[in-house]
Length: 214
Image (cartoon, rainbow, N blue to C red):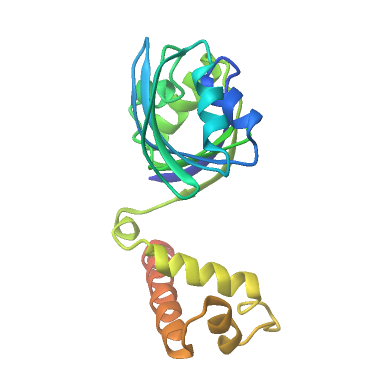
């Protein structure tokens, strides 16, 4: 069962392409969306110092039917947009693949993470090609059914990522556990416990998926 990440270049006729490229300094996250053949509705979290300007850019798009600001706090706003342009998620709907939400959009490029079957992933590629949507397959990893129930928690991924970036797993080691903990702002004991649990999950997955087959 593949888990994949795709970088999708947004078609220029989709409203969010113009908005995200015109305001490349802002952050856009699609919180949820409804895809249809003729129209689509999306809730988008916008992080910016100039929300009014971005709302004006959204409202000026010819394919935007309605725009509602649901709430705003500090530099973040949640907007609901209905548009008649071809839905960005239509190829996913056609291939029958649920996408992990939220997903980010940065300067005209969306980042999708999804877990599905190999056949459906291939179908998604075909539908994206058919829609003339350019994309890059950033990575594909194979997840066994046993490993799928034992994926790292968000906190474990965060701590493990920092440990890798700091050089804790480099040979020779470039950072101590104390240094990793200081970077994360946690105690050495907490850091050690989270890393140990993450390492245990990875080792058990490897043993069950690979060593057992050899």
